Length: 373
Image 1 (tube, one colour):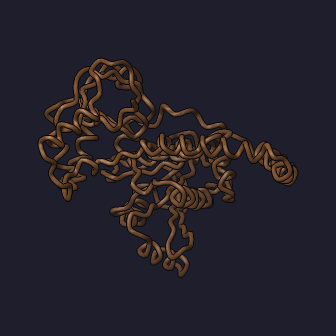
Image 2 (tube, rainbow, N blue to C red):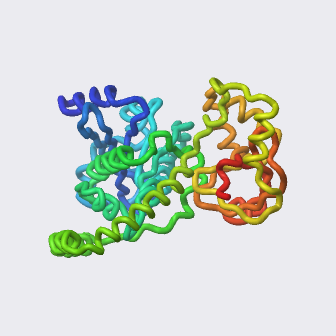
């Protein structure tokens, strides 16, 4: 291990609690199991650090940018690199990536080409594309280059390490403006296709990207002075601010915070106060269609509610993860319309029927404060 690699790994141990580690990969060819380079990046001591590994694919030619078969000839297979160099770095980590629904199936396929099952389980993923599309209004598109251009973060799209470092910088940019530190999608949900319903990425060639960036730079100064000279711009900013506050309120609903149902430290209400509170917050049964935002959830079986409430009260995230993996808690990946079918029960859950999406026609119980009235 060289000195630079050793310093990078030492900085990894000093990163903040709950801080992400970003992952990016290059495929050697069109085969999903042909990862030939894997990169990790993180922020520690106020700086961005990263490390990458060459990997010898088990099948197919090497057609990746800036990589040749000679460069990978002495490299180890993916499963060996993962077991010896990567697995211990990711212990108890929150992982992040751009387009997790593509990256992690490739990681799973590349590892399991060895005939063994991928040992990466029970981890949560922060997806840069998902977060950017949720918290950044008016994106031209949600390609990685467009997201990073809005954030003014440079990136070499042909280099996995550069993409991983840009991804972790992008997440840090979002964390400084929005409440995303508790965000995470279970890896099992991603592998099951929870994010596959999102729009396809608009892919730009290098020439198209350079032409677009030159055009934007050409008009940057003109746009700046135009905004400064005209009063309508001030009025426009006022409307944008109102719109931003509205979008921020909607986006805040996309964070799944199971801990809100923990009753520790909450003073006991009297019977009259409970009744008044119930009447104030009661939703009418069968009263029309309502909306549940991304990140909200439904419990299909009423008998699961006490188990869920106890796990939330005890901060038992292992039990909650198990409920999500076994579909005893359904997490919405996009805004979904529902029908209320009955009155709220004493635990704060409302019986509903899902009207669209992957869970259409299923019934269950939703927290009343997650339903957009």
